[in-house]
Image 1: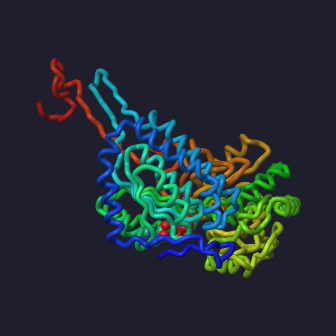
Image 2 (image 1 turned 135 degrees about the vertical axis):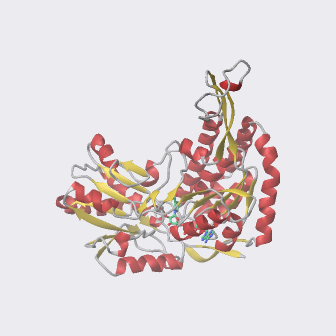
Image 3 (image 1 turned 90 degrees about the vertical axis):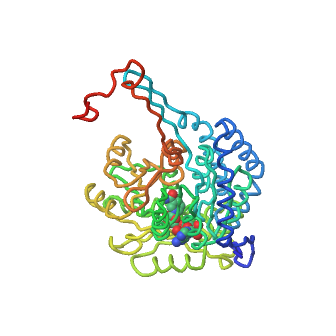
Amino acid sequence: MIVKENPARITERVGVVPVTDPAGVDAAVRRAEAARRDWSARPLTERIAALRDGAAAVAARAEELAVLLARESGKPLADCRGELGYALAFLEWVCERAPGVLADRELDDGAGRLVTRRRPYGVVACVTPWNAPVILALTKLAPALAAGNTAVVKPSPLAPLTVGQVAAALPHIEVVHGGAATGQALVTHPLVRKVAFTGGGAAGREIAAAAGSMLTPAVLELGGNDPALLLPDFALTPDDYERLVMASFATSGQVCMAAKRLYVPRRRAGEFTAAYVAAAERILLVGDPLTPGVTMGPVISAEAAARIRALTGRQGTAVPLGRATGDLSAGYFVTPTLVTGLADDAPLVAREQFGPAVPLLPYDTEDEAVARANASDLGLAASVWSADEERAFVLAGRLEAGFVFVNTHNRTGMSPRAPFGGVKRSGYGREYGEEGLLEYVQTTVAHAPAAFRPGGPGMPATAYPGRA
Ligand code: NAD
């Protein structure tokens, strides 16, 4: 059994789910396999209608689900409402765009007739993290189902409840529960034809190896250590500063694409720090996720809290940020912190912190800032802040990141139409956008060369040189 506690009030039990054993995983995959032929044979318009019905059922319960999500994940209620709303908006975007993206293409010209079709894989295995569990399940499930696949999803044991309820409202999704062992049983199942994973690099390697052992293709969305680079001409309004603060501290910093390193021109570092601390005082209110006005809750677990405190306690100068409300000793609360005076090899700079602590890193020249921003094995996202948008876009092209935000960072810079994913060790494949839909289909071809049609010229001399 997985007993899910509320990370803001750890004596409160939010729910319980059973761990799915290997026989249960096998049964779930077989049910998904049994359903896939009929589902993929249905016209796309019918599949879209079924997805929209499911989305309407989720929307009708959105408030109840948002409260459940807040209680199991520790994210502020407003964020949880936002996540459900964005997940449904993304599903609708998929429904609108799928007919165009998935349509057969046909060419019939002097070279012959060529038809390309977008065929579903079959059963898709989705293994998802806890930090944005609904949207990160739907970025996989919505395109997979629209394209005619069926799916088995394994949510994180740290936030399994809301995903289970959302999945139950949508067609042809099986849910299995557990940790790494359940994930491995799912990913290595011989009837799984595609794996979609979001999570950390350690689990990502094991998932990729397991999928590779079965020759099952995978899309991997892994961690990031995203730099936010303020160019020397940055001109931030108070609102911009608040957005930048939340880019690091939303979900207590536990976001793959959070701003995790702040690069600021040295001669403007003092001015920046004062305005940043003032913005945090206005926008960051730490407390119970269900308390109105709270913008930052606890971290997910005791281990996470200990890990993050160790990162901020050892080196540099920690500047506590924001305000607090209520009894923070009841849960896994960590004070949000800006840390100055760190060397580039300090753990808080060099590794993904995945928590509410962010290093401030002064720089002297733009080239130096770009080199330091790129000095990471990870390359998920980044941001550039400048009064000159054109200049920011040019600089964005020099950053080694799958997604560069301009004058914003994190959730405020996302769009269903913009493909998202990492470079370097932040993963491969894409979610969102047309690329995200195409992850769930394989292109197949039927081809009649004009040469062999009745009256055609026959074997072209160039096809097999030397053969008549
Ligand atoms: P995690 O890697 O610990 O777990 C993710 C999922 O994988 C969970 O469902 C977990 O049970 C499962 N899992 C773990 N080990 C496994 C194994 N060996 N085999 C099969 N399944 C296994 O990640 P988490 O703590 O839930 O999330 C934090 C990490 O996820 C961070 O590194 C964060 O940056 C990353 N993340 C990335 C994105 C993105 O879009 N790139 C989004 C959110 C989170």
